[in-house]
Image (spheres, rainbow, N blue to C red):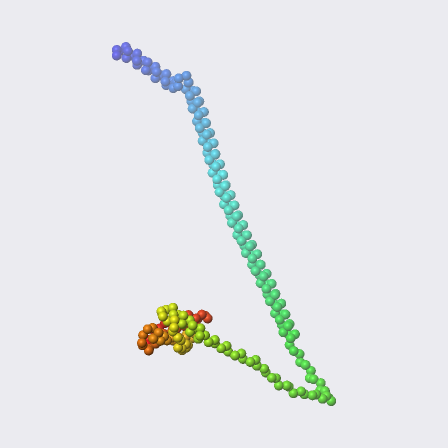
Length: 239
């Protein structure tokens, strides 16, 4: 760069610096700039004041609402306590009235009982007036004859030995073959067993194709229970 060019650049720079100091914003003077700045500051201050007033009003309203709510809660609690106390007093009065009525009824009943007891006391009777020239006939009491009803006879147990024998025979024929010709030798009740009978049978040996004279013998036990007779045992007695 030549010295002339350098000098021209320096002069342009100096002129630009001077114009910038005298007029910071192109087309607006310094006085207008200061006035505009003051108005903006005032608006800012007013905005801050309005905002502060709104905040203070909100805080005051919140405090008032909390105080009012606390007062309402306290009033509600006090009213509840009063209602409970009044109800308790009413119940106590009702119990006292019921007790008083019961006492009055008891006193009335006791008074009536004393009246009846007093009225039922026998008054002393005056002595009888003696009677003269009166003949009384005394009759002797007649003896009372006590009659006793005759004692009914005890029922006699029915002898069912023939039924026991018949059931024993059928049981023997069913259990042993070739016993249809068995004859009954005895039917006796078993000692110590109510309703139990022992029936003995005998079959001659010569009817079985043998020369032995010893007969075969069997014994059948029968039992009566609830009016029904059944065979319960079969025993071969020997020869």
